[in-house]
Length: 178
Image (cartoon, rainbow, N blue to C red; front, side, top):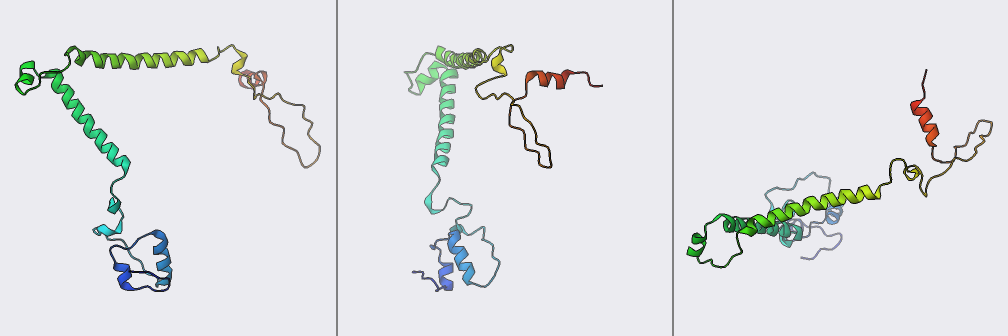
């Protein structure tokens, strides 16, 4: 099947192996009369809603393999932790880690997470200046208000951008408004 511009045949449209790109559909729809058509949900060749001929995406495969391996590892851990030794010996499993690790590894993991969170919070407290420090109000991007003389007339320019001083904010927030 070869497609040439200007040649549109009905069998070209129904070919199951033709490319259904939006650009081609748009160009074909310009050449045909205006009709409304909806894709058939049972048609597997449309490419909508199914993985198609290209197979699943790598993220889907990694997610599936990750979920299956997590379930398998959890089952193996629970069997190792709770099944009696003579049952393991009866099915031919003689070498496995000591049972104390079934309790020690999760406990170590939880303590590590709690200590990491505490360390992170402590570092944030150490990096934050005290509330009385002027560094909480001024930094290298602070701008002092410049003297501004608005022109008299119809056009008033916008004041230059500057930080509002803490004394002005205190007056606005805490002064007795009557």
